[in-house]
Length: 335
Length: 242
Image (tube, rainbow over all chains, first blue to last red):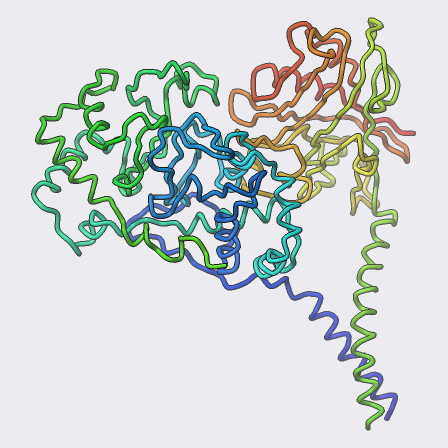
């Protein structure tokens, strides 16, 4: 009897041991991103970083944590505030740690799962790596990813959050960046009046409709629907600001044809993402439209009458997505 | 009956541990058995092993000192008469002269396989560059990833050399870049002689001979020179049996 018992328990044990050894680390509740109807396939490879509720929560927490900066004062949200289309309003050039001023206007964050290049000059080619730049920039967070990992590892609250997201509490650069990506990937804006009009759930006024027609004629080759960007780099006819001497894409490629080319930004939520252009030189949407109607530096001249300019702006305002801007899942998390 | 329950519980406890131990031991055994082959990577200069922070002299007699030497070797493929006999999976190795352990590359599952050649890359390939954040030797906390512009630093060499017209004669080479026309990753193919203890030597002498030190003492972004210098380094590998 005892012998049988031992044999039985050994057998059970082996089974138990095997099972416990082969179960993969628990990595939370999977989330499937809702891709808006008729949109292209996202470029982000989710198979390498599957979204989970816990991963997104960790990313959101990191996004809003000033602990990422050298002096614990600056978080991602300082320059990317949810209520203003995840950008830094009022300042032509965004400022970071100790009020140091950078050289460009912070970009609005949305629909990043479709992004191929990040930053105005496309210096970053993958969303995961984007956060490395502001973390290390002396005028932004003035820190290093190595130090951030050490700091986060020493903060007790993150032990549980990393455990929940990745199956153990170890902090690494890879995990930190992937968690930030997870949160950022959820920032989808696709519920503007324009979107509802496309889905037949809303109608444009005559003015908005005329603005849409003008937009399609003169702007859509770069600001292509539905993302309102062709995701490429274009010359926008702006003269060089000699106090900055920012030649855009050429800084990265070192190819003269790329001189003064900048990444085409999305126009979604543009009502809220002022000031405009890479150096924030225009405070009002009206000024941007005036620039494009005046410049002779574009491949094709854009002709707009004063009334047409007003109509075009009316259309651009249909790209505002309040459900996105005030989504409680995107704002400062309650700690 | 009571006894048997106690036995069962005890067994569960001990057995679970035993299995884990057995499993760990089993994998340890396979790591140290004949199945595993080790290749030691040895940077050389003027016929001598490179030691960090130790004064060396160039062929022309100019003193030089290396403070940092770190580089990626990746995509290891073992060959016999040009045919592939073993290809390492997830083959990324960050070698750091500061840490001896990183210079010993261990390859499992080479048991009974005959090989006479080795193919690998100096640096990280383009596909890996666009695959997002990675862990292990590729973790961006390793100090081998540029922050202001995407890209791994394939090869990092820092030190002082009398020929440099810089402050304290300092030089820095951070070689990388994965977008055309500045793709710096280099393919290397070397013959492997017969013998037990294999040493993959990287001779830095051609690098120091060929760089124009008056003009080029600092590369820290993808550029034409980064590609040129990477090619010189890629041609400076050889395998020796000791």
